[in-house]
Image: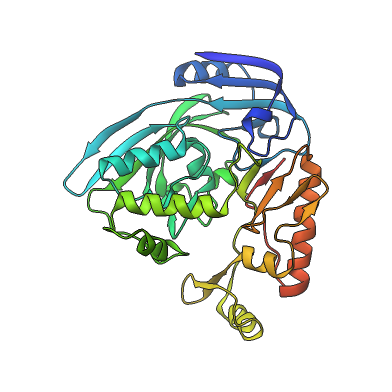
Length: 338
């Protein structure tokens, strides 16, 4: 099935609840129907936007091109052995529904990514991550429709150039492929990652066995305590990336700010906590017109009611400037501003 709508509101399709429109909105839950539609036109990347759950977008104006909304459903096991299982998931499946399913089956690899909003199709683009785990580590391949040739293709995970909140789909291949399904390789004998953030301490508070179910519940409890519900307070989760700096720069900052959280990336680099730096600059809980910074997590910018995308963008820019003035570091948005 394919459905095309004209002059269509995107407010229900972005978690900031910004009321903008697109010229055309194309929704499909069938690969062949979507591929046939794509074949009838010549597409330029600047005229196309591929949208899933809209949990990583901030719209500042109407989009004058075509929005593709891949809504493919389904979860299936396509291969397994004694150690691992390969599962094929539709791009339109809610990400947290997928994570819940893997935990129910006893398969490890994405449990730390519980309660993240959005669709499965966005996971390879953003390389979603949390609590020391990234989706890209478990993506075996991506199935997609190439807009330029109107053909269905398979892209190996190793060719996606996954990095921290990044992939080739955000760069060279931006708006060139409509992801329709994702194949994940999960572990039947999971190795838990508990040493990032407050995950281990939350598990200790809960008591009981350390297993996939309890890890998922601990992550959900932490996220609920810090992050606002998008249905009540529109937001896009963490607005900024945690900056990665050289070990020398991290050491200099630690000498000046002994309480600064620093996470080792490798022998040469460290990751800093953007939320901590934003909080040190006095932004946590502040209001900026109809926008603001969440009072429990400074990484989260919120729409307090009727804010425009431009207003939220201006707030983000002011935060970036103040962090640079205090710490000498430009923090980068994780959210895609259009």
